[in-house]
Length: 209
Image (cartoon, rainbow, N blue to C red; front, top):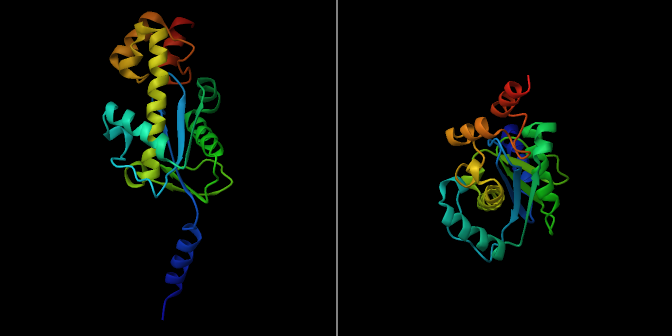
């Protein structure tokens, strides 16, 4: 006879593994000192598989760009959203990230039956959702979302570089590299810098005591 614990586990699986469309969600840009945080939600088409999906951090820029276009062409639907620097500073980076994720899911043309989110925190959603630690390397739809989010954010930082080439955003993408910190000390922060992040906040305190 099956134990009560087995039935409990079985019921949990049935509750979570619902039939219907599955969306993967991931973000890019939690750590940088500048620019928005970007989230993407993707519902893949089982009839149009995409080879080479992986965690965006494990791919080259060329691979990400190629896969970005293929995902856009083959996915049943996808959505990209962001939380602004002002929202990051006003809410904190975690809450701003969850906000961007919620916006991405809400922007999907088709409503998923279930959402799988990379990491260990979930945004507030009106559909069934599950957090998957390491999901960008384990779940194809999350991998696709990570690629869309990363490429979109990199393009935004490339645009910022065109306006302010002296900061080197085309190379560090807003992360706190030695080059970026040196530019911040010499030139001061831009409106696109996150004033709630410690390196930028310390600079502002020294400049405007």
